[in-house]
Image (cartoon, rainbow, N blue to C red; front, side, top):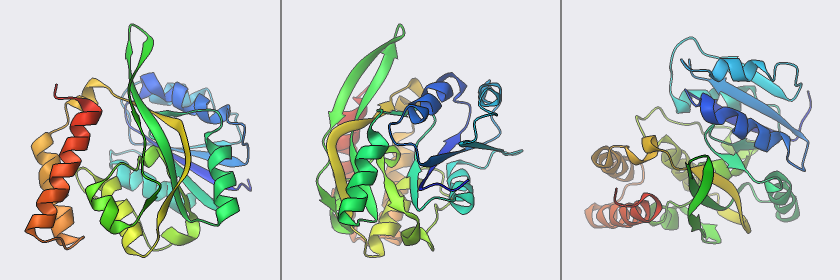
Length: 253
């Protein structure tokens, strides 16, 4: 199937959110896309939910027999994608109906290779959505500004496939998407905000809050030191700013 945009959805045990994620793509007012779901050996109801979409020609499902992690899944998606543009959407998040049309039109108008949008985070309480925070991202990033302000959401980005011909997600325990964006910006690309509208919804679950803070800080320090070549003072400042933004997003609990 020929398409303009490939949407890559890695999934692992997010069956209770997966349908909402897929449906948010299917109701987009932009239709020139393919959906590639890579199931990372889920042990919940994910495969049963994906079975409901087996007759949809826009949706391709790849089932892994062993858990490989999100980096492996996204890299497979990039490799088999047919679109000119690559978009990522985590299986517990979803898009607003005009997300793709807004961003693709902006890309075509300006000939940019790396774009993103604003977003909001939410949680569900008694099956009702409660918005926790709306994130207004700066208009433009280079590597230097991104290191101290990592607020580009992975589920908001659309990238030209040409600019990631030699860039893939590294297999790191966490923060693999941070390193991917750093590598792209280090290559000389700039990232541009396509819209001030909050077009992506990030679900904040208990699993999000339970992430190991010390492990995150250690990984960020390692990436900044070994890949971004920051000295001690700049690395410390980067971690301070990222930690502050994490507290603003998730809270102290």
